[in-house]
Length: 247
Ligand SMILES: [Zn+2]
Image (tube, rainbow, N blue to C red):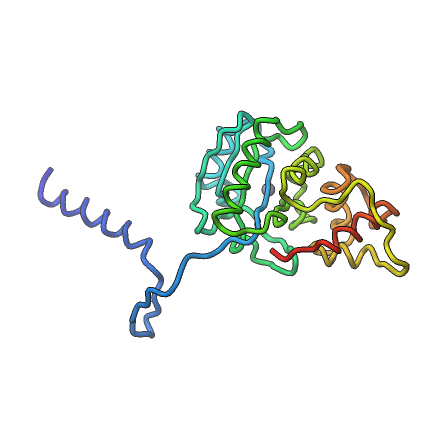
């Protein structure tokens, strides 16, 4: 290696190290304080890759694609193998445009977990077991509320449907994660507004039919059309609105 080449290599290494330095304003004098920490995620968002394999998904999540760059913090294969792609303290690009409990920039406050699933098939038991283990670890390490686990379709009801109506939300709730309701439901009081409750638990109801579709997919495991909520929906929404926990 010539001296010139060695110098170039050193320069490239130094420049790449610079990328991770804190962003400083050119207008201010830098007088660093040690009294800070990294961002604290408050929400966990579950996705289905809607692709044919975990290997194909891993490639998309790590490269530049025709429709832009996307990523997630974790990818869980059908076998239950967990891959981490982005540090928990960093902002991965998995949520996109959406809203949940009035928060618009969901990438900044969440951890994204992709599940290898084509979007129509049942989820593998090994994969759900691995997810539960990962959720327990994330909630414990970061102090995230165990109820603050939602689907991509919940926060982006007009654009997304993952992780699909096949996702076992009830099983996840029995393991202690996400929102669910008891088998025997109380009658809501007279005057109870189910559509208002939909917004109160977190859904963006500006497109009401889309919000109802997302609710049905998550809490009734079905695809629906229109804005109508039936008596069972009202009971479920009354129960969920009673238990609402802010992420
Ligand atoms: Zn997604």
